[in-house]
Length: 412
Ligand code: C5P
Image (tube, rainbow, N blue to C red; front, side, top):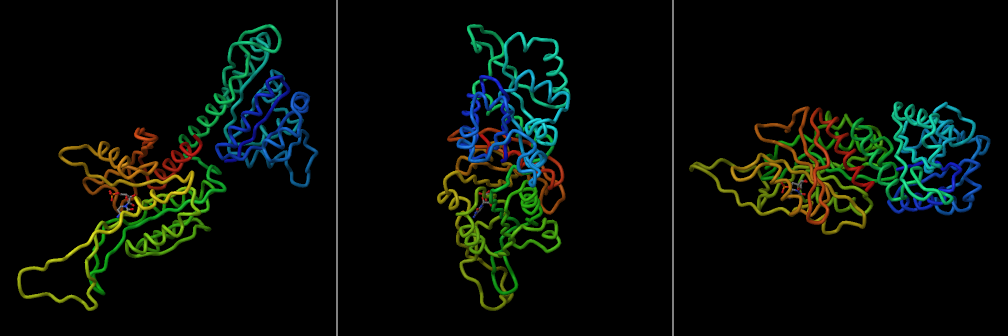
């Protein structure tokens, strides 16, 4: 994601260097926007080297690119660390006389502010009032830590540790994305592979073994990933044209019919994908032989079909995952007399070895072909499984929540 790190002119500016480094190590693009005073503490060369992006303080640099507006518009998250009492006052007043304040005034992304100042300034009625006003407007103001300040004095006003600022800021972004279903820009620069629909295994030229998956959920996920800025490749197994019509422009669609074709398409697209979402309902078995001609009804009572097992595509993708790749599986469960659906989903996540699993309750005919869905998103970290999100609603709404949950895991 694209993060703007605003740095105001306080001694704690040096700690912001570690914030840049930590965000970049997590794969985020960081644009540092210091105030002029911040450069008195840490120079532009340091910020440029750490962020890999140019640094400017005023609104009159790169005027042709309208940077004073564009930086804020393009941001997925704005973090200001440290924020001085002066900066809090200027942001509260809506002043935009430098690049940082203009950026804050322009952005619609969540803004997280980590103040650092002397205790007296922090407790001054003006600052208290400014902080309350900013919080009331939805800005997250992190409480300063208590401890040693610039001189010999100590008390509340210390900048929290860089790791704590990063964790708090990413949590705010994830929460924002989840609450608003708005993960816009969160997948920019990422490639997402989605499989959708249900495979068909031919018995003869006219018949097949198939399943009830329409592809609506997978198509909605592909659309949500594209809306979040990702480059999306959709492998569509027998998805009808009217369902595919719901895709935004730019999603690259490959049509497949059988499990073998789905596997080949997913394998080919996997190496360049940052995220793989295996939403397709895959046939576990296929006929041992496909008749070359239409099979005829015999006079006796029945017919025996010999089936052979299909590969588990998801397992194969997990085995050949690339570094940092996030793999998401689906579990359509009806529950069993011995186990509830969540128990089955947690066990499946551990068994399949993917990173996330979307549990879909398909008991009593729910989910297949319908417009709505109810899911639980689980995350696996080693042997532990935690719930990331619960979502219910139209397949588009559920998809936005699943993508937001996935984004929150990607930003950890
Ligand atoms: O084991 P089960 O079929 O319930 O697992 C569902 C998940 O595994 C889904 O993500 C589905 O796309 C994937 N799957 C697969 N290959 C199979 C069967 C399922 O990739 N042969």
